[in-house]
Length: 117
Image 1: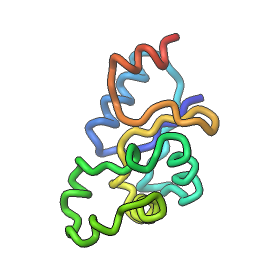
Image 2 (image 1 turned 180 degrees about the horizontal axis):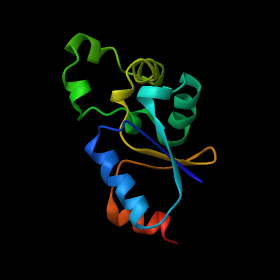
Image 3 (image 1 turned 30 degrees about the horizontal axis):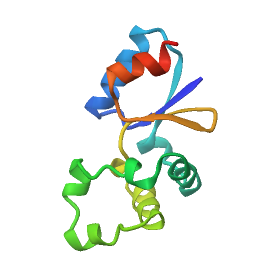
């Protein structure tokens, strides 16, 4: 079973959930706002895809951060701290199967390859 991590009011998450439903692919949704995310899980993900991929520097949350706070996020430890405290700073979605990150972000063409094998 796939686990889709995100926040429900995100447009990208809405697209992903529709895509999974239309393609009849079973999934579980993990709502960061209700369930949070542990630093240990973030560390595991960083080990698989890198903190630079997980941290959403193009989103509103990052852009609204003070420049001095942004400047402190220069390594995995600092990124994990930020993402655990402010889950809106995590790129969405993170899709996991078992303990493995399958993909981060949404790309319909890539999803065809990844999930419809």
